[in-house]
Image (spheres, helix red, strand yellow):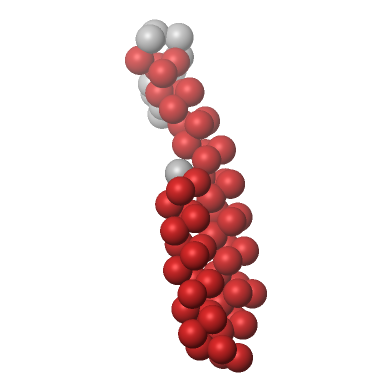
Length: 67
């Protein structure tokens, strides 16, 4: 997942550089957002894959199953 964030960050930085003074908004909002969601995305994906693996191997219950 990190290479995808790297490409987006480089593109956002390039656009901000081309825009000059107006591009500071991109640097201030978009780049931190990319970094934040990349970290949260990795953690969320890992958690979901661990739950899925547990369910597939029989170690866990089906999500949303009523008892």
